[in-house]
Structure formats: structure tokens, C-alpha cells
Amino acid sequence: MSTNLPETVVEAPAILPAPPRVIDDLTRDLTHAAAAVRAVSRAGRNGGDVAVAAYTAVVCTGLSAARALEEAASWCRQAPEAEVHSLAWARVPGHRDDVFEYRVTLAVSFPDHETGEHTGDTHHARR
Image (cartoon, rainbow, N blue to C red; front, side, top):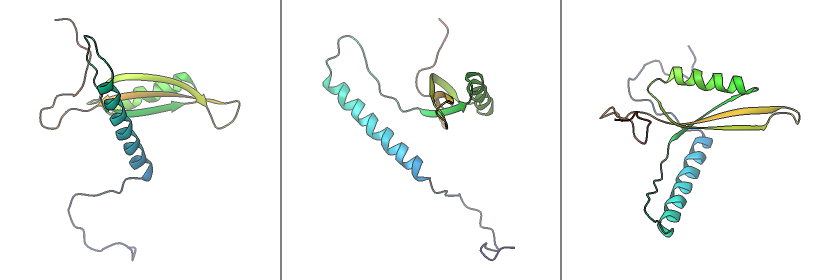
């Protein structure tokens, strides 16, 4: 046993520190959401509504378009409770000048823990 580890195990909720990138992303997203709300309040609206939503973004990458889509499909299989709201596609420079990387970004939400319902818009058949 390592001398750095305690010999007893205490059962308690685990608190994992968030990596700085996650904190930076969250701060950026909240700042952008606030800016979007401010822009909506200044704009003159005629007969329509504007909503600002913060969905979780899942980014799947691959060296080919097919591989990126396969990664996205694999993620969806691993998270069947996730509701995909939108999909964005990008071809971006890779690790070398002659190599490109393909990215599929999924905007997703998960069901509310209390009601079990998804938040946000989802596609429904005609009633």
C-alpha cells in the first residue's frame, strides 16, 4: 500500500476538481449567454420570440468525415438518455499543414432528475 493513501475508506460524495479548461469554458459560455440576452433586449422584435439556451456541447473528432460521424454515433450509443438538439460540422486544420481534422459538435441535453423530461426543443411528429 502506498504511504500517500489513507488506510481507511470514508464513504462520502466525491468532489473532483474541475480542470482549468472546464472553468474557462463555463465562464466563456456564461459571458456569451449574458451578451446574447443583452443583445435580445436591445433588438426590436416584430412578431417573434428569441430564446437563449445553454446546451452541453459534445465534440467528436476524426481524421475523416466517416470517423468523426462514427465517434458521434458511438457517443450517442453510450449516452442513450441524451437528447440531441443540433449538430454542427467543421473541417479544421490538423496537427500538420497537409492534414485536416473533422469535428462533429452535438448540442445535447439530459433529462431533468426530478421530472424525467428533457429541457429545450425536441423534434415531434405532427399531432
